[in-house]
Image (cartoon, rainbow, N blue to C red; front, top):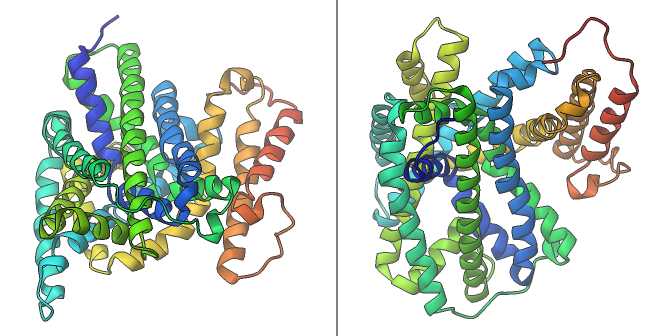
Length: 435
């Protein structure tokens, strides 16, 4: 069997980490820790499940099944097409790509602009340059390992390490008290798990397989089995890096909130701490971290979305889809970061549980070969429950509060289990071969 060298495998893992680690990955770990205080490591445990474990499982699931479309086909071909398109649009031009640009702008320009600076004009210019450079790199998707894995990822990790080591040398005042939503281990772990949704990495994991496989093949592997094996290993490497960086950022956020209580979010927690440790240079350090991280993710998302849509809807080729997604992302990014984050929450709350269920079912597939109805029934129960629970949250009603775990934001879990049981009890379809 063909194998990647250890060096190449590490570079592909770095590339995948770079594609995962963007705006949300920087903001949410310190933000969670700032709220959790002394309960930080329970919150990190929950975050690790949803923002490390599930994305790694997603990479493995897609590698083993042959792609998100194939995985979705186990539910139904029409569902597969709809869910796949929605997932790519969510992690692409509609939510995640604009978020990378707006977050970069918020950290790189306003802190250094004067009080009377024309920020609207600065944002327009910044977004034009940011997206133009991202498009330039994304037009060669097979080269991402050379550009992200070799260059950008090591720089990013080094900058975060500098901040973390400074915290170890100057630990400030220690962790603060937990907020009410985090004041028990169960609450803290649950909140960490739910906040992990906002990173979008579980959905992104289902999409990144295309580009990672392309980069692995560009490094000499041709056998499908070898590509799958290398993809899984690169996913594990990326997961280990994510966990280590999340732990560092959580420690930074908890220390920051202990010294500067009640930060508005993770960005504020980071800003307060680097300013205390590094003075004016801290703003430059933090701007560089955000800019590199967000740029890497933007490139990865543009590449993945363009590759998928060029294969699924060949009315446009890869380059034209990439240009189109960058233009749409540019327009949406001008709406502003807070609006994008506000809109993204309900969308993620609805589609994330479905993505989780699909991934977990893929690891049970060998036991479900003769029970293909499990997939559509479980996904149906999960999707309906997620939609109704999110509708209830948005309308401030409590008609579904009786569902176990609903108060913790996990009300979809029991319907998903019910769907699994019903699917197992239903007779198998005759003459149907599961995917």
